[in-house]
Amino acid sequence: MRERCISCHATVSPEECEPSGQISAEILGLGVTCESCHGEVSGWVDQHYLRSWSTRPNREKTGFRETARLLDRAQTCVRCHVGSRTDDGLIRDVNHDLIAAGHPALRFDMLVYHRNLPKHWDSEKRSEREFSESVLQVRKVGRAVSFAAAAALSSERAADHIERPRSVPWPELADYDCFACHQSLTMASYKLPSSEHFRSPLLISDGLPVWNAWHSISQLDFRDSSVYLKDLSPHRSDPQRFLVAGRKVAQHFSDLATRTAGEPPSPSAALGEIVDLLKDRPPVDWHEAAIAYLQLEAAYEDLSNRSNPIVNIDQSEQTLRELLQLLRFDAHVSPPNASRARSPYKFDAGLFRRKVLGMFNTSPATP
Image 1 (cartoon, rainbow, N blue to C red):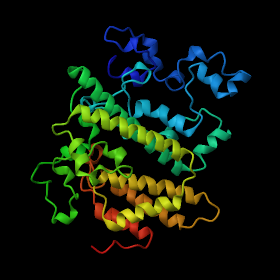
Image 2: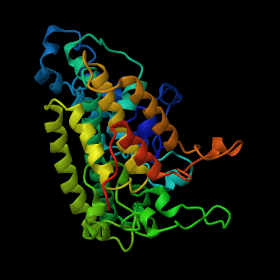
Image 3: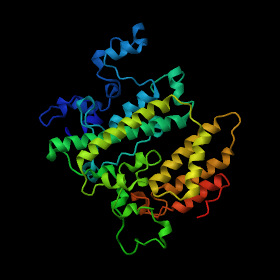
Image 4: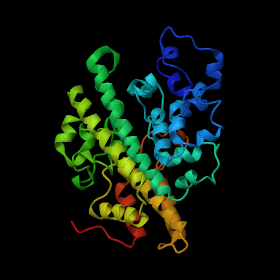
């Protein structure tokens, strides 16, 4: 528990996470406190109500972690909800071993998690308007920050494995789509597709899973390059390649997040991206459909907040509810097994595509 759990589930120092460290009942009882997000309290607790606190340079000197801006807040969240092996000197790493033991795989979405967080701030503040004026921007910035964090974590795992091979499992399967490997093998439930038309273009589930698919899809689709797929696949993977690739991807998407945070998003353009994608082909897998749904949902919410929305909001909301039902793991599982559904069993990418295009009275492109 000291080595694997409390760095995220409590507020601790690196020393307390050592195998010989001592953890008080109070630390475990308090769990995640203000300091987990805002930084070690001794540097700022007696200053944060003073007039000088209003300037950012003064706050930074105290060790206070900024959370006012969207970019700052997203970068704070991903330390635990995506992971890091270096931030604050703590190891926060939900790897395949932990997932096999029962920990949920980390599939972070900034907008969902932020809305679930108990509000403990003044929503009328100017800095908070960034979170209410455009949910699409919250989602887009959050995805870029999350991918940067995931790539950095892959790089850190590779670096630790190179330095201390026995300290980090390799390859790290938590970086890949669970369902690329974990598929039903019973004759009753496993059926080959009726034609190659319904298979992933690169047969992803046939042994070449995509690195960081949840974060990369729609941002940097590695399926477009067989070289990337080969170099970043778990088959005979080279940690040195991961170290280099992870750092490059992390820097690129960290910069992209900064630019995105400063640009007003276009809901209409976001909808257009989804339509253009689905006109050409169905989603290659459940991940791509789920990310498309999240983008649709955010774009429509932004449009619905306008005085003269350009779409039929009521009709769109009904279709969005239908799409969400299609994505549910228990969509095709009958009771009593529905409560134990852990995979997108019988997800119909073609039906998902038709429903989305139907929202725009658009037909698939002719093959």
